[in-house]
Structure formats: structure tokens, C-alpha cells
Length: 259
Image 1 (cartoon, rainbow, N blue to C red):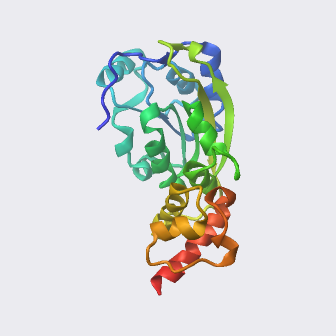
Image 2: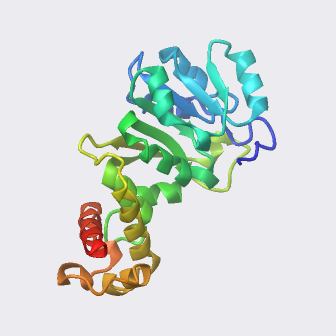
């Protein structure tokens, strides 16, 4: 269960130019299904509401909900933990693929993004602010130190882009870290959610769990029943494989492990 914020407006955006820049990064037209995660005091919400009057905002803090109901009476704000959101139901209710935007709580950034990936057939794009370090991992390329589980999973399904950094100075109070805004656009040819996806993520986690080892050794630890790997994978390390290569590897392991 997400704990409410200690005080209304904690670490809220205070720079109008930054707010407008983030809101303008959302590639949604008037009438599209827009959802804001964690509107807080509504610094960005009012900017979005002017273009998307039928938008929905999900906020876990009841005090923030009360504040938004008073300040933005036309806003459909819902007192809800975003990790319990049923994105399929929201999409059906709003009548279209979702355009999701928000300033994500740093400590649950990954779970929120994974929940959206799991609902990718009803999500068009995601524009979110997060800790810079996490953003860099999401967009990292193979053979780099930052390349890892987040890079592979999100790049498998999305076109990812780090749009811009956000200085701590535009928040009040100022956080201790630099933030960044990232846009995820789900690929039209991304595979739909399926049972095989669990194996794909298990393979990625196993490979990066011991990233200094070759896949022959790291995956043997993750899959004890695995005898060996073909040479095209056996001597390589996790950071060398592209997301598509991980997908091929997981399909191969699926066939082998079922025998």
C-alpha cells in the first residue's frame, strides 16, 4: 500500500516553463484518453485540463484529492493507488488507447511502468518524470554499464526517448536528485501480452543477475535443468544482447525446457 505524502505539495513543480514543457511532450489530441498519475496540487493538471477536458487523474493522497476537487471542479480526479489501476477498464471507459502522463514517485517508478507495459495493447504512450538514473537505464544501449533489465524490457515493447533533464531547482522543496522526462511509445508490432512473457523476463533477470558471467553460466544458475546453450549465445554476456536477441533466446529456452 502506498503511503500518503507527508504534506500536501511535497516536491511539487513550481516552474511554469517546465510544467508547460512536460505537458506539451504528450502526443495526445483533444478528445484522446488522457490519464495523469499523481497530480498532487495540480500544477500540471490545469495545463492538461485546458486541452483534455475529459482527462482522468489518479491520486493516492486524500488531501490532494480534496484540494483538486475544490480548485478544479471540472476534473475527474479519483482517490486511487495507481498500482491498483485497471488500465483495461479505464481505456474502455474513456473510449480509446490511453495517453499516460505524470511525475512518478521515485520508489515505485518501475512497478508503475511494468503495469503499463503489461497493458500495452490499450496504452498508446507514456510521458513520465522520474529519477535521472532510472531514465538513463531505460534508454541505455547494449554494451554500456547502464544497460540492464529495464533497458531490455522497455525497449522490447517501446520506442524510448529521454526528452530532457529536470533540475532540482524547479521543485519545492528541492529533492536531492536530478530528474528526467521520458517518453515511451508502444511499438505497433510489439507482441501482445502472453504467458511466454513471464519466461522472457525470467531469462532477462537471470542473465543480468550475474552479468559478468557468460550466458552459459548465468542462465544455468537461473535454470538448473538447462544443459547448455548454442555457441551463438553460450559465450556472450547479458549486456551484449539486444532486446530482440533476448526474445529469440527466451523462445529457444521455452522450447528446450518443455522437452
